[in-house]
Amino acid sequence: MLNKIIALSLASSVSLFALDINQAVQTAIQNNYALKKQQYILDESQARLDSSYSGYKPKVDLNYTYNNRDKLITSQIKEDSTLSATISYNLFNGFMDKYNIKAYQSLFDSSKFTYAASKQDLILNVKKTYISFLLKEKTTQTFQKALKLYEKQYFDSQNFFAQGLIAQNELLEVEVQMLQSKQNFQNAKSAQKIAKQSLENILGTSISSSETIEQLNANNADIVLDATKIDNRSEIKSLALVVKSYQSMTKGTQSSYYPKVNASLTYNSYGEDFTPSDRISYPDGQSVGSVNISWNLYNGDKDNSSVVINRKKANQTNMALEDLKLQIKLQYENAKEELEVSKLNYTTATKALETAKLNYEIVSNKVKEGISSNKDLIDANYLLTKAQQNYFDAYYNRYIAVATLQRVLELEI
Image (cartoon, rainbow, N blue to C red):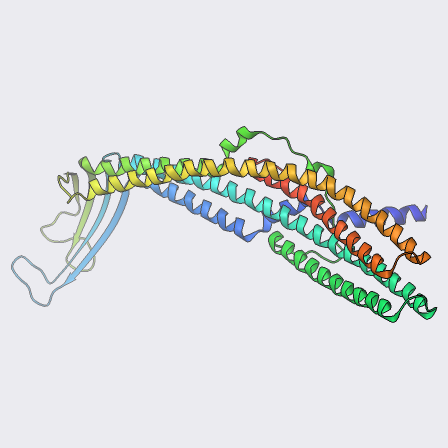
């Protein structure tokens, strides 16, 4: 019973310190600084949209003036003060406020899609970095196995040399290969360490030595292709909304051709010192209602130029949008081909690895029987190591190809 409790406890502790690729993605979404920056950009766009509604709200101004004169002219007094409170409201602004709101609304919606695209880019980068670490880990294990085989070969060769069965140069050749294998193993461990640090950076958190980075499962290599999804990419929607924003800006600029109507109500209070009250010959309070109509008939073609500029910007962005659609279609086709190639490479690499294992076993037996030389076994070890590397490259490239297609199609994880 105690053994079962201990086993359950160990299983529980392992699960607590295990990180899989989906957890890695969620951790990065929460912690990644680049994505947080995009969130702040989105918040700024929201604030600009909120600010654009100010055109439909009244304005309240409070003004106080105090004068103290050393010399007086006719009708002046030594000291006087005025307190004014004004409420003003724009009755008509040539539809500028309306189109400003539409422009900022489009930009805000565009920012939301830009954020979504940045999030998708992050997800792909996390997956690639995660898979890269797993590949580096397997590479380290591959070189470690190769080193153990060389060490065994060197031990056997020492015995053969002591018995006079091989020459010293053959023993030295095995030793050199063993030392080179040690170097390869150390380089692989360093690359694995750097890969882990890269993963920690993109996750925005550290990974403890007790935490297991889980291998991928079969579901991570599955994908259902739907080419229609590329037409709904966030980048496309974002640029389309930028075009819409420039179109609204163009209409807003055209508002300069219309007259402007403003109404205001001001209350004034006057004083003979710094206190704005009880000034002789002035009322205790004065209310002034005003309506102001202004119409700029000519502005040096500035308004016309602004309209042309916004139209050209809309056209530029529209061309960029069409180009983006072509690029995304090309991304999709490339990603599809990469997936097909990765599947073929995996099939080939699996067969090659089986052959290399069998070849090493045959050559090893022949060396023991004195039929083959150590040089043949060195070559067999090299081919086996290369086949294992190619196998893991092909194995993980399938997952990278699927992750790339998921990004192109913006599929949820």
